Image: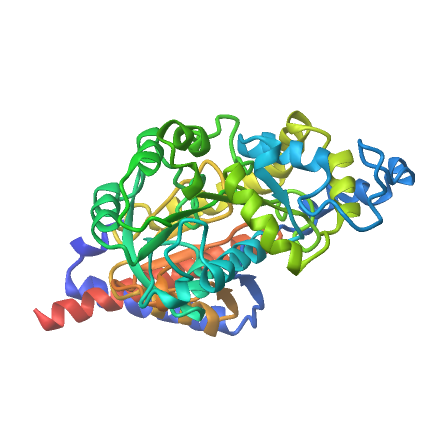
Length: 430
């Protein structure tokens, strides 16, 4: 196919008319397809069903002989803390095992900071004036929503192939004590699928911050979610921070939401032993214990890090073909046209798609008009404002592959039609 930017105006007009006619036919089909969120599909959830029927749960005692059906063990049962310590590369005493949502644990941590501050805080964050947070973009909309709800000013930091632009991060945090932290999805980032380089992790550990209570919200949501047999490797931030004596700034989060059951998994928080003890003091007023039956069920099903890795290979066998199918279709339909770029991740749950500037909202709107729901354009930026209106997050995991390909074909059509219109507009303005 001829690159669109090489076409004459007459060719672009003819292409627009043909695409518009095709789009009208798609609208007549009455599609109802959803690619809006990164949800596990039914086949993935079925892989964990044996967890619900395990004979070993007739014994409801943890490894210390404590009945998990009763109160107590605020930080989680020992074997759950050990399992997730292995997953995150920390010590069991540096782990708190929570409920089903790591997002909930992150929200709670922000709330504690606002109400009480941290041990090294001059005062609670709510009393510090205008609090600021660094937000690598494109990024995770729910991170940004927490800041927005709590009135925290968000500062965009561009992502690079090695992680956030660390020159900019270091300059900002060293100069402004009102910058209290940064959001990070360090492995297979949402939505680009980038894994932070070793040097990026080391710079996080050693950087100087004007705020004594600066925190790195290290949302390692996809640390086990590989799509290939050659997974990315992420340097251990906790180990690097201990070498620099900055481990108190590290707040790690993860969950089994996309390992077992999205709505009934277990979440984990990890930090320095000092920070864990501080959080436990505040939690002691909030809750007596999380669901330890769920914790025991997960430990006996997942067993150890090796069994968890094997389980995640089964997960990958379900969703990796979906990613390949979408990426192949993008290459076939759009690869030679010069109107878009997209990531090819080794793991995670998303493909990050960059259209021509000023086209994302129109593409997503057209898809919705024809019955395909996507994540709203702009959602990957704070306040929902993509300054270039070009980034779209693609979530291939949930739909059956036939529906996925149908939705992807319509998406490609909308990209082409919107791009042709944009090129014609630009030609008219020239």
